[in-house]
Length: 81
Image 1 (spheres, one colour):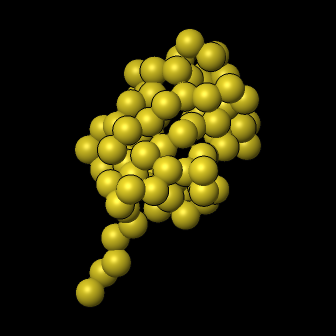
Image 2 (cartoon, rainbow, N blue to C red):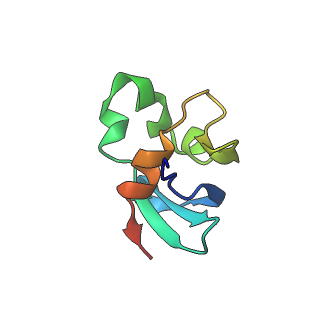
């Protein structure tokens, strides 16, 4: 049986390019996006107004500019809130 990580059900953009993510299993975690913003794929999100467009889309998070993030990365590399 494949173990699936919990999926996000709500997200809130925080200061310092962090995301507060509420997962379907009841956990709330903080994911720090600052390192990813140095990668070309995510660099547009350095613009705070674009960063703040984050929303839950299907099984992960997505921004208005089309970037998304692997759900496993999001859950496994977030710190508990």
